[in-house]
Length: 289
Image 1 (tube, rainbow, N blue to C red):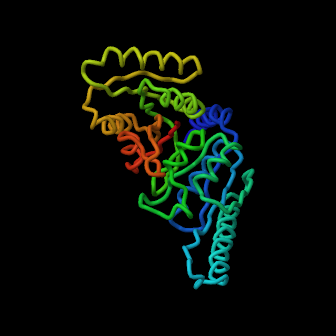
Image 2 (cartoon, one colour):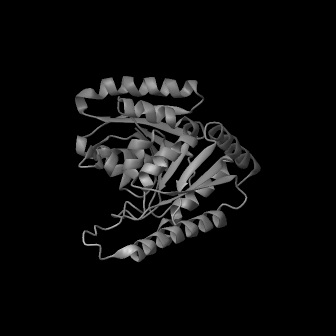
Image 3 (cartoon, rainbow, N blue to C red):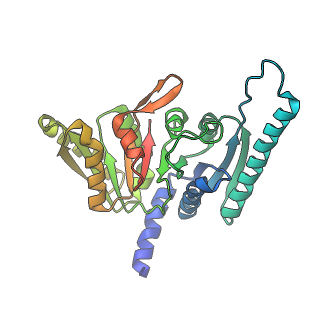
């Protein structure tokens, strides 16, 4: 990389750093979750931000109506949690050397605890783990974290990746969630060289969609973001595919989108497009609700 290119990268990172001074990441001692920590460390270093590492876990005692399991069994479960949190802290400190850091050890349900802890962070780094069902007492559910935290959540690909942010696609829909996502994503959008505000709609709505994206582009330009609008006509089942195609076309490694979901039987479920974006592991997704 030439000196001129390095200067441009530094300038872009400085723009992002103005709005992101602290990152929160759930740290687990397992190898499977290590990509998430690597992403958070790399981004904190890039932005010169404080990295808040949270070790959060709890055990769920089994029902013991006959008193057969005994206190020793409970002590054993507690010891496992204590050892896991100690291992997570050691992992965090080993990987975050040279950064400004804070360690937060909490015995609680991860997603709910992280949502509370997000009060001291500008951005939450999530994902970076296999896309499979995991114990909610050990791992923070991304859907629940997005819906409860009130903070933007940067979801890393399952295998992790090095965040660049040179090009970004804003998946626009004229809703509260999209407006929130654009405002929350401003620091990262300011750091990008190319931003496309994309609305995917039915054929009969193209004119309205063009007005929407033009308004968003004007908003972003007033904040110093290099942006342009684009509309695409597609069936509602192909919205996520159209967004991914645009990201691939411009070489974007980040999609900014509103998160749409609801609680169902005590669990959070995302809408179709949000769900599809989260389960396509090629790139980062910044979600706000």
